Each structure stands twice: as structure tokens, then as C-alpha cells.
Amino acid sequence: MFSMVTGFMNYGQQTVRAARYIGQSFMITLSHVNRLPVTIQYPYEKLITPERFRGRIHFEFDKCIACEVCVRVCPIDLPVVDWKLETDIRKKRLLNYSIDFGICIFCGNCVEYCPTNCLSMTEEYELSTYDRHELNYNQIALGRLPISVIGDYTIRTIRNPTPIQKITGNPIDSRTITNY
Image 1 (tube, rainbow, N blue to C red):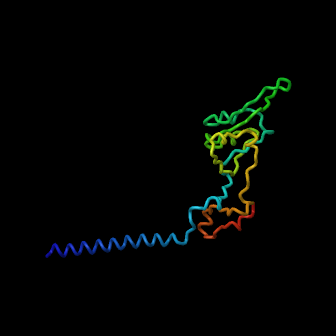
Image 2: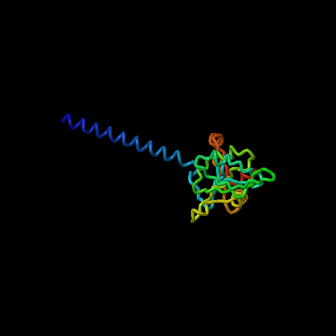
Image 3: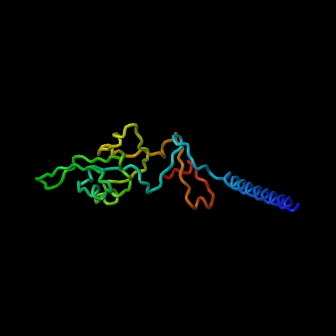
């Protein structure tokens, strides 16, 4: 008889514990109802990158002095700099400059240590191709300015909320991002 009573008590305690766990799970689920979704619908919605985002490298051919600092500071010796020494003016003349973005780790060392600031990081992150050899950009492809996502009216731009906006709860939509 005594074992039957303890069995009912254990069953009652387990039932209460299970109901409490289910209630906690339900409260967590309800707390996520008012939050914005984490995922975006990629082709139709694109993230606006932060100010110091390390995207595709932009190269200005006229500023380059062929010093090869970018090659020396690159952890994988990636930039290929072809130059010729002009004996009459005793300076290097840049012939070709290329970077293979299939191998690049986007560390930004080449941009940071360039003495003439001929390299800069852009906000462009869509570099996908069907052929990996198309990711080898020469100085003409590197000199192309990035396409701005903000001006395209067919794409809804989304910005990650800052911690201040998360605290205040003021949402940002694509209509409020016109100050660029």
C-alpha cells in the first residue's frame, strides 16, 4: 500500500515537472513572436553592409607605384604584380596587377599597408560564378566601381539593427535608409 502511494506521488511530481517544462518552452516561444525574422529573402532583400565591411578589393591603377608591399604583407602571397623598370626615369612601371578572389581570405592587410592607398575594400560581397577562373580579377576588373544596392528600387535593403536600436525598439526599414 505504501509503495502505491509513493508511486502516485512520484507520478504527480513528474506530471508537474513536465507541465512546468512545457510552460517554460511555451513562454520562450511566445517571447519570440514580436522579434524580427533573422533570415532574409536573398535575391529580393539584401543586407546593407557595415562601414568597415571587407568585400571585394578596388584597385586604382594610376596610384600604384609597384612597390609590392601588398604581396609581402599578404598571408598567402596572393596579389600578382608585374612591372618593368624604366631606366630613363629610374622608376618601376606597372604592367599588370591581379588578385584571385577564389583564394583571397579578405584579411585586408593589402589595403591597410598600401603606402599610396591605391587599394580599398568595397561593400560588394556577391562574387559567385560558375567558373572559378572568372574570380581571377585583373586591374581592369579590380578598377570597376561596385554596384550600389541602395539605389536599386527593385531590391529591399535591410540593415542590421545596432544595439541602441535593439534597446529602444525602433525598427529600421528600407524607407528610413536614404541618407547614403
